[in-house]
Length: 146
Image (cartoon, rainbow, N blue to C red; front, side, top):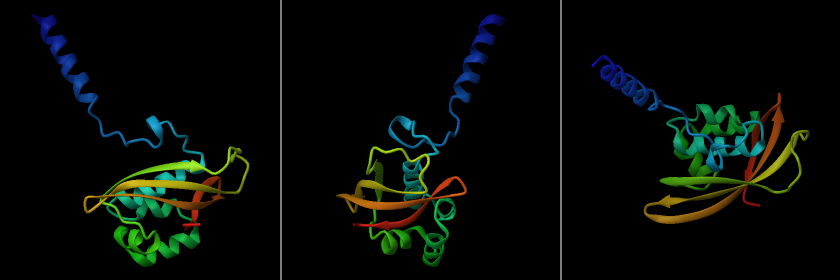
């Protein structure tokens, strides 16, 4: 009887520990390396589209972009005025413009693809993101269509 109770207790503890609040990881299968520019770009947009405020997105922005974002105060205003791209739900996918290595570069461009919905309509779009390396961390510096 003790073995059955112990087994049930261990099963319950294992089930409860498996239900942790682990943050979803970036990239296909959650395997994107946090030290690459694609990671910084996707995380930046993920915070703008999925967070309650801009705090985490500001950490991934260059000083000039950070000042601009702060002037718009809310995520929806940033989506509307800086990105000109609003979504109710969105999936964000990066694509590096070249096959070169970025580990020694100080700046790079990343193409970021957006696929989502706004008011029930499917929207697919792309933005070009310029990133700069500041203190060994990639920061989003500019966002453009061309």
